[in-house]
Image (cartoon, rainbow, N blue to C red; front, side):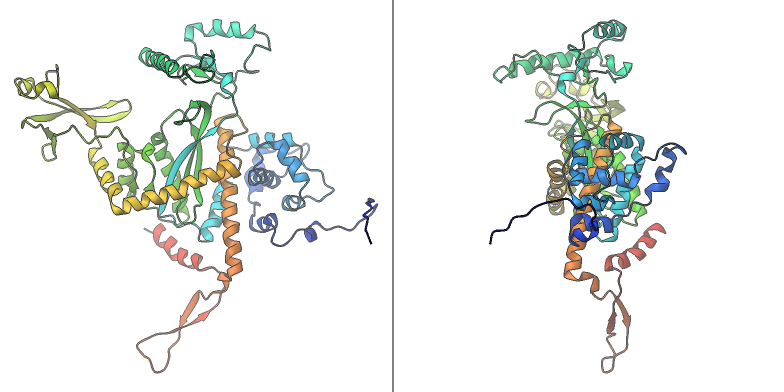
Length: 530
């Protein structure tokens, strides 16, 4: 007999949300594993003593995490999604008949809390992973990737000289609202002025000319907006902290730089930070290393190896890590040649020997484009009448060698990179940190930040990393619970046996603590007392 379901709302009902959520549900397990009670004393100082009660800080962080776990990048979309999911309501602590916070409350609260609060939540979640044995600490892979800012290239304004700034602003103010590119210019006066030198501006002009010639066969190349843009000549009034950057084969965009450190044990993110995208990766490596080393040291983990790509290569970084006792596996940048061809370096006298046996002696050490370099010169008498002078120095009077002051650090690092272990470390880096970026961008809402400013972008990146680490943690604990790993013998006591006196067999006793925590305690004590 055919059935037909007639729906009629009840006036009174008995309903428990916890009964409707399966025990294996992701958000139910996350609710049991994640304890954010420490946020109450941390955030107390940001609220007043009177007025209406604001959103619970624990609920705020949970709502933000739901957005990244569900790959939803807008606050309005997150709240609409939460209202339709019973398991998410249970995770947030809301019943089916309770009204969720307004979406604008999420945005205002995100701006209220400083970056330190988000970093503290990230550290607490990382500690969960460390206690579960997901982090070894000895080898960290570091890499970066651009993340699109919440601003369009169409909003770019041209920087003007300082004396023309007021005249430029007066012209902009009288334009109609339809012609304005941005509703509000959030950039400071310093950023609206040209700070580049004449030489830098001339280089940009030459690049622009060459770029326009190379683009003549591409669609839209004749458009007046299709031009070479630089951070020295343009800025975004919508998001002044965003910077123009480009990857090979990609379009120029306003981006932030997301810098990640990932542990090779289970690919857990151990550090994340948002930086400006107009500088090289090598400029941010020491800052990342200082913060990461402090975090690992606090948990009793010993950091030994640094894995990174050639973008982080610099003599300053090699010397910094050698001083800290860390081993680097960072391929050298293509600009490093190790010295002129057929010239031999004599370490004892600190000079170079040319093919004709003449000395190129050390003269001075100076900074060139932010890099410390050693300068070696010959004398005019040495090069005068040399049979290979034309091929060696051309019309110059003496041979000059400008080379990095960290040549020995370069050579030691290159030797490690080319070794068998170095090739193995390269494979570990590629299989560790690069898939993490792909996961964050494709599945955890980090393709584009939905906020304005580098501080807000840093919060978004921390939330995405927290969501990633929580998924790693829950997946690992779920597998361990299924396999019964927690019930394995982990404590042993000696018990004498009869007949075999040369062996001391041990009888197992069971305990609830995982084996990782037992091994970590003496290691942590020994490391901190060192």
